[in-house]
Image: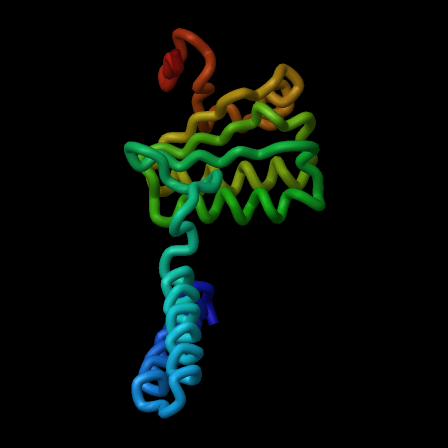
Length: 170
């Protein structure tokens, strides 16, 4: 079962639970049981809506900002243990396709083999969808690694003046 179908099934179950709780709250005799059922219905509805749109009420890295831009902020040593999380976040940022994908590497100290693979996969997917990719905040060591692996052919640095894709952030 794919992730989208699983999410739809989970949302449907929570909506069914909401309907059952509302119905029980309406027909229940004791007043305290009505209140309990309606509270349960409100909770189930909130969980159902969270399944439809998981970021309701707060902004997390990787979600959309103004103009349809997706920003993914990575941090720490991107090694085998954190590469799976990076892959997941980059993949989520590309669905639905944003107008621009920005990968913020300002807090990345080093890149491992698995994180290079995660970046390559995201860059390939973005390229197939025609999504421009900007990399910001990469330190010298990270840029050297990206250049050595040939990945810098697939994106632009957002913080290099004079390069296409550069944005003045003043």
